[in-house]
Image 1 (cartoon, rainbow, N blue to C red):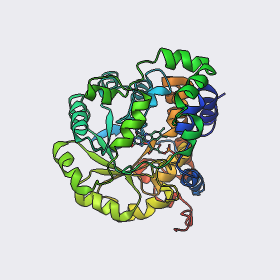
Image 2 (cartoon, rainbow, N blue to C red):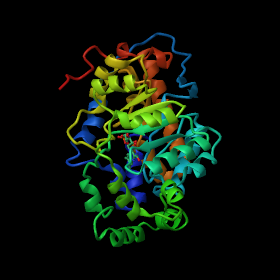
Image 3 (spheres, rainbow, N blue to C red):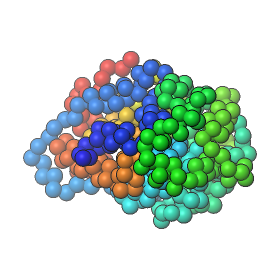
Image 4 (tube, protein in one colour):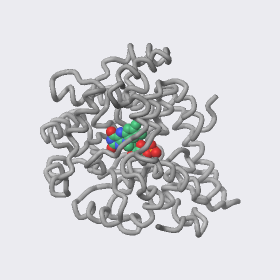
Amino acid sequence: MIISASTDYRKAAQRRIPPFLFHYADGGSYTEHTLRRNVEDLAGIALRQRVLKDMSSLSLETTLFGETLAMPIALAPVGLAGMYARRGEVQAARAAASKGIPFTLSTVSVCSIDEVASAIDRPIWFQLYVLKDRGFMKHALEKAKAAGVRTLVFTVDMPVPGARYRDAHSGMSGKSGPIRRMAQAAMHPFWAWDVGINGRPHDLGNVSDYRGSPTGLEDYIAWLGNNFDPAISWKDLEWIREFWDGPMIIKGILDPEDARDAVRFGADGIVVSNHGGRQLDGVLSTVRALPAIADAVKGDLAILADSGIRSGLDVVRMIALGADTVLLGRAFIYALATAGESGVSHLLELFEKEMRVAMTLTGAHSIADLGLDSLVPDAILGTY
Ligand SMILES: Cc1cc2nc3c(=O)[nH]c(=O)nc-3n(C[C@H](O)[C@H](O)[C@H](O)COP(=O)(O)O)c2cc1C
């Protein structure tokens, strides 16, 4: 039975899907220190309880780049989300749209931009990686524009991939990967039938579209591996700034100096993120990085934050520390893997309820009311 957004969907997902997929989502890089810190540091931020303040009217609504969000949450870009449920990106996007929040499609999604954008009435957000193949980047941006995407999320914390040891152990990568994945699928017949067989094609929709030929999981690992660009700098982003006339959000900022550079570059927003602890293990949890970044750039651009958010209370904590909106990564993937669109819708309802309770008991009538005052004075753990 699913009661808690933060733990029950994770357990249910682990039962439902093959281990290679569970660990691909659940894992982080190297010893997974940052992954654990993201969750633990955030959960450790103490909220300040207030009472008897007539909290009968409460609004979770917020506005970002002229777009109304029913609550300050968007679904994060997650590569291969389409492997977690049948045409998974479409199901997750439908759930997000039905709850009045944005869905972000990853560059390396199973479903293409067109497939997802045409499935819902609300414009999706699109995430792009910096890749050596600039032809692909241009093609993807053109596709996104044509599909009605306005908000571009540009991920910059992957000039090289962090090693994910769990993927090698689970069969997600490695020489024996294909046979191990087949064996695991056979042990999870519901997933095998629903997604493995009926969820095809298991393409990288956007890459196949560009190449004009189908792509699979092996291509994903090889293509991404060959395409990361360690030479990237702010200068390389200028043509995209010129090409893209909608809001541009830089994802993967963890330092106040980089946040200031994003302002100088002309970004409309940043995502304070360590990629969910999947890149450089040992860096700050985002919740520890956030206050200094908010000090540096709050008001100059929109501040989004992710990594470690597992409940509505965590959303309230991030907003209180300076985020305008948050992104959910694993939290929605576990729900998608468990029950598809209805799982994600239910998860968002749980988040909403938890936020309402947290706002009522911290005396915040609106998102704008949340601030450092909503936390106990020493709530921010000492900085490193
Ligand atoms: C399975 C998985 C795949 C991801 N793929 C992408 C991606 O394609 N692009 C991207 O910018 N971030 C990607 N991320 C990072 C998320 O967008 C987000 O930053 C991270 O999941 C937040 O941490 P959380 O999962 O602890 O909430 C991925 C995360 C996971 C778990």
